[in-house]
Length: 106
Image 1: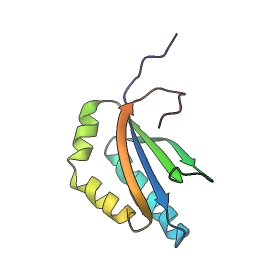
Image 2 (image 1 turned 135 degrees about the horizontal axis):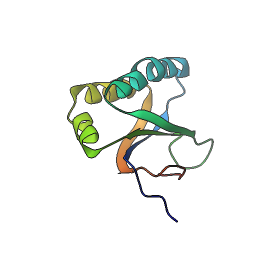
Image 3 (image 1 turned 180 degrees about the vertical axis):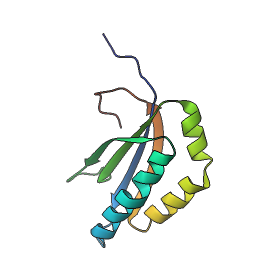
């Protein structure tokens, strides 16, 4: 029996620049993730692609409802965080999908 989606997942994908990995990691752990948590999201997964044509990072954040997503996308902090993230990454994109626990989603 297929599990019914509960909530939504925000999937971020990007290519991390090799220039300053430590600064990237500090920014994500000290600024990006805590800010997302303050806006009602929890990290669901982080994937690294070691080789191939796909971006080398896929990060998932989950939330309970559509209003949380809508509030995020209209929030100036979201724009600022992504602008700051672009110092460390290229090819940034995101999409929203129904959350399904235990299922790999791209």
